[in-house]
Image (cartoon, rainbow, N blue to C red; front, side, top):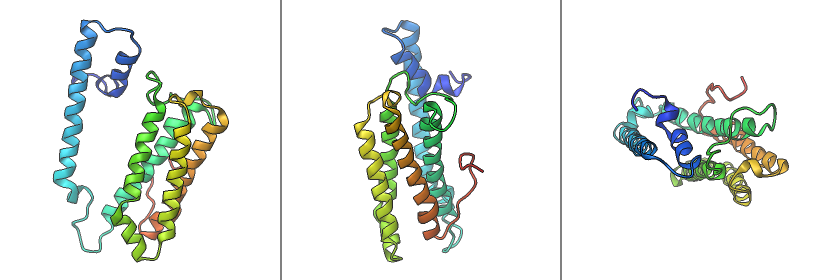
Length: 207
């Protein structure tokens, strides 16, 4: 297992084994047990590393007025949304160009669940009481309200779509894409400037 690719070791391989087969033989069962155990271990190691080294990883220990940590954190969130919008929706559904790749959890036909989980995480982070308080102290409640509304709109639409987003009609797929575009614009053009930090370069921002 240790010498296999990330696909074999991770969720895609597990998904293929569990959902592409009506039943599993002994070797496949052994693979599922090994791969899921290894994946669980890696995730726990990542979580532990963040818990033990959050200050250094977010670079919030430099000076009292250092914004490096905030910069890294919010640019990572922006990258997450842009990557999800591009790789998990736009390209596999062929909304703005040729079809490329596939929807997340395509074999399991549970692409909606993956997108929904990411939106739920974004909603939790971007409506965090500390962040809301920071914006409120600067009289920037409108930014928080805009973010909350955009996330709610995307989540509501997603709840009305089928489990397999590929089976939704094109107009609804495009509407979901547009909602995510709105979220990225608010983060990039309103939230990040309001916090006094800068939008960094990433491979999905069109540069």
